[in-house]
Length: 483
Image 1 (cartoon, rainbow, N blue to C red):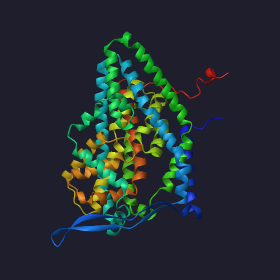
Image 2 (tube, helix red, strand yellow):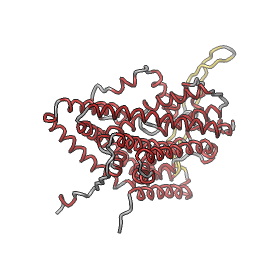
Image 3 (cartoon, one colour):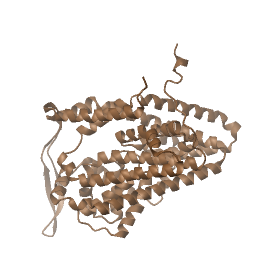
Image 4 (cartoon, rainbow, N blue to C red):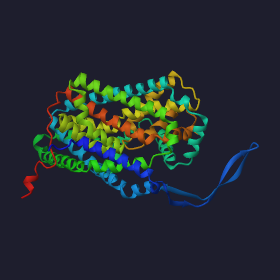
């Protein structure tokens, strides 16, 4: 019997996870509330303007009980951890894979000029696709006008629901920190002062890439004979880490079951989601159009069927959807692009890690839609110059943003501040889109990963590095180690 393809296994796991979560929520037991914790009463002194005089006022916050449903409590304790383990395993091998594959790819070039050409093409194509994505987003949101249909009652309800939300407060603080940094801070942050420390933190991916490129170029400059022992080490490490990817992917269908079940039971109030449906559909329409753009680019330049492309990259897309993280999906993206599509390692090992860090087409498109939507909903006019500012700021923010879940919210704050959005309304703006951010984050991460694979294919084709697929399975050498 022919083994079911991996992307179908993952898709079945996703569907079953969603159904399991929905069924659990429908049960009477699943809907019952469980006391999670009790927040004791507290008071604080705030200064308020009363009759023109700044007066200290005591603000008393009553005791509050935090409850969740039985369904969410059960899944978060007994199901979701298996999804977290899977994501942690992918993150575990991300840095070793980037280090080994990038050093191997550069040392195989034998010519620094080839690396320069590849680097310039990669960055230019990433910038071009990001500008296309932002433009699509702005075009759709101006045509659809999703913000004009949001009532004041909905805005007030959302503001009350997410008042004091820790996630929103954290995003605002992170955005404020990025805004206060100097114009060249991103360049400074790219250079590590401790390579080992950089490798211990997945959010410092650009520092790892810089160190790997620096080491790879230095290996070229000392000559092939002297560099050979180190090259053999990284070649072997690369093969081992890719085998680890194969082994981790054996659990992918079960992991996405856990991840999706947790997303379903953690979803917000359905009434709130319905109120934001028009906005969400505008974002989804833009993301679908961006996938179409990728398929057109692939078909016209690489000259292969876009359906073949989508079939080969599907497991990476489904994992991106489940994890909402380009960085966590990176090992799988590299494996699919190299082994299943035929992009040579010296291209994929550079283009894909860089893409996972700086290329966020889906997120940038979302920034454009969300920024204009918020302005429409709150009755704030935004002119043509303001929309041009959104394009530039979203482009720059996508380069400096981390490839982790929720980074889009931080980028949105930066984009809104660039068009002089009232700072006192920023919490309201985030509350407006927070309810549907997680499902949209899953979708835009899928687009980000698809964009990375597309650009890797285009760069490989332009350099004559797009060959035939060579698939390696996890058990290819199993007979050698078993009796």
